[in-house]
Image (cartoon, rainbow, N blue to C red):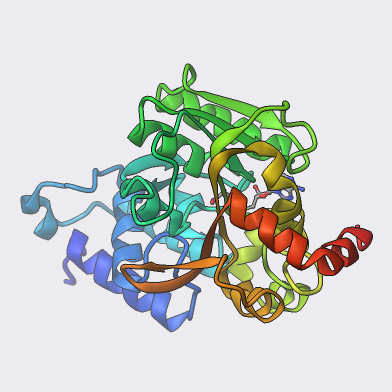
Length: 308
Ligand SMILES: C[S@@+](CC[C@H](N)C(=O)[O-])C[C@H]1O[C@@H](n2cnc3c(N)ncnc32)[C@H](O)[C@@H]1O
């Protein structure tokens, strides 16, 4: 008679199933084996550091069924693993994640862990803003890793902000982080930030429509930003100087839209950041350089503003 499977069997079978079904991996891990392990552990309510002796334990039929049901959802409905598990790691913090906001995965985590030291950041940072905060990952990581910073976190989506509020409470950061509903800077109180960080929507409509099915589970307002992906980025570039201190710094992730922005604004004032894995479409710019660029490209900024 065939033996019931072990935990390791289920992980290996799960990885084969994910690969065979050609699911899109990338929201939580970058390979099928790690994703299968996370799904199996979640289905069986086991921690990530599960005791080694469980690896070869034979599982009960009910446990095998629970694992298979979770893989069915992943493969048949293409729900990202992070949404099925309800958690994602960001900058060393465990964040609650669900369909109300993008799964946190910004490379800006690396800059937060390095305190933005590789950039021309102000000597002292007291007040930071995370614009387009989604479920709050960047704002909460800024606050958790820099306990003396005050952090504001803004988003237009009430759903995303509700998730950000839950994450803020789970991490005990309510006293340090304020959540604001705002269409970019429109409802931000008149104040100056030493640091503004943003991971805004930046896909072109064509790119958005070509995405794998997994991305349809994420909020549409988190991903596309006009025909060339830069509508929101130009609004941020235009308005940021009013909200930055004199030596303040703006950091924005725009992914593949880097190529288009470099074509329009090839100037060295936009510093494209190199990460441990290479380029990730993230730039930094000081307030002073932003004012220089805005003066140099006045026509371009006016044309983009008229498009709104
Ligand atoms: C790419 S997601 C980033 C979420 C989060 N910062 C992260 O890194 O996971 C972009 C976010 O921008 C928000 N957003 C879109 N348009 C906006 C606008 N006009 N004003 C403020 N937030 C906006 C979306 O609701 C979404 O949460």
